[in-house]
Length: 591
Ligand SMILES: Cc1cc2nc3c(=O)[nH]c(=O)nc-3n(C[C@H](O)[C@H](O)[C@H](O)COP(=O)(O)OP(=O)(O)OC[C@H]3O[C@@H](n4cnc5c(N)ncnc54)[C@H](O)[C@@H]3O)c2cc1C
Image (cartoon, rainbow, N blue to C red; front, side, top):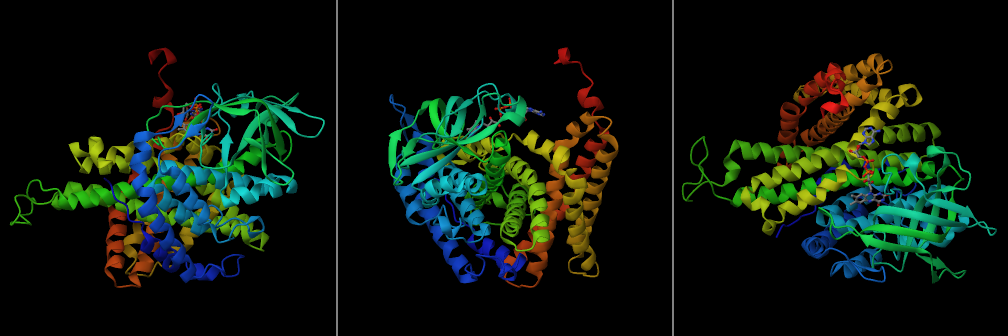
């Protein structure tokens, strides 16, 4: 059985020593999040993850969800009790506004807690995770009446949330969606249509399920400009806030799938279901983007979380499994063979995962901090800069952290040899669970296009220029530092290559858009490497001020990243500058 130990000390080091959370005390909610409070929250989340959610990960995988003939769905054994602990602990609303029953604490806290929950049990963590995304969309776009009626129960967790975009004929291209919404004299709408692949669409964990559904009103323009967003509850809500009659929405079936078996993936049938408009008619995608952006960051965290738990188990196994002798000479002569951790190739795999995990966690926290500034700062300029930054980083975090997160679960599985392929050790579950994160919330190819096609050009390149300026200023201010030179020099070189790739797109993509499409995934990964390298530089700087073993290990890990992972930017640059010619040259019939 795999084990999991939540990296609480690692998170505290990032919050306190790298990002200096105490400097944000002027933002609402931050004053309540003293270092002691944050530590207490994280230790409690760690306990819940390690003792309750981790043991249920295998159970959820083996049992999966069951749909009964009446359309109800049963989650795996133990999920209901675990979910009750989530509600009782107030975990869903730790960063939600106090006016709706949340604790108003910084988003940074929620992000760490969610990483722990996802490492312990990704399929389970999706139920509260989706609810948090739905809460964010309602806070930003719903009417006060809808907010007051639904948010307190969702923040508490007794009602969960879902997002309903996908239809059988449209996933990426939402402009084609067909679900209909017909306005009623009382201002509500009747929603009719079929949605597929809806995570947590039906289950037995909560008293009600609040579906956020994209549909078209009568006479709406074609394409994405004619899509509206609706709130459609499973049970209608009475005037006094109690759960009332069943609405016209039901689960038609649940999918058999590769991983995350403990999360129900549902076909949802809307049959003149009563719904209420969120935001304005035909501006539904805009409103749904709040949930999607939140969910994209959450999915990036899933990639990191699976990489972390897979790494932890691979490291334990590598210290126990005896095979062969070290090429530099026997290390454990009293044993029949050395543990495989002595072999450089096994070390390479472990260091690759470790170097990714440490920097990815920092990157996610950095983004969460920007989200806090964007939502809570009194200064409009500061808010805008933080929002720019978050928009730019969202596709990078989603795409890179899930591609690498999956790759790392495979690396960890490889360390187990054949024992990683069989079910007993649980490593193949991490691989299967991590795979979906590359697909849903916008497949990673779409994240790369979002970065290159939209985010780079946004507001005349304001966001990307600010990112370049920040890293450049960081490097310049420390140019004389001998102790940091080995980290800063490679980062400077990688940044220059990223800037070169950005210029190449500016010069070559307008005339030939395929050049942008063909290079977008490379660019996203190149951006990810530079962002992760920047995080390693900041980690190394904070670690040089300390002398404990953990700090020394962080310096070695940062060195490994700079020497052995960051240089991949050169390969990405070469591919980008090769353009689309060889990618697009073959006629369709040749495939
Ligand atoms: C387990 C699971 C859970 C899910 N949960 C939800 C949920 O809760 N709510 C929800 O609404 N949906 C959900 N989805 C749906 C998911 O978000 C979609 O599957 C995903 O967005 C891709 O859409 P698609 O499957 O239709 O693929 P398609 O859109 O058909 O894309 C197929 C491939 O073509 C590529 N592609 C498509 N268009 C372009 C383009 N213009 N340029 C370049 N490449 C392109 C894509 O990157 C992809 O690799 C879930 C799916 C699964 C499997």
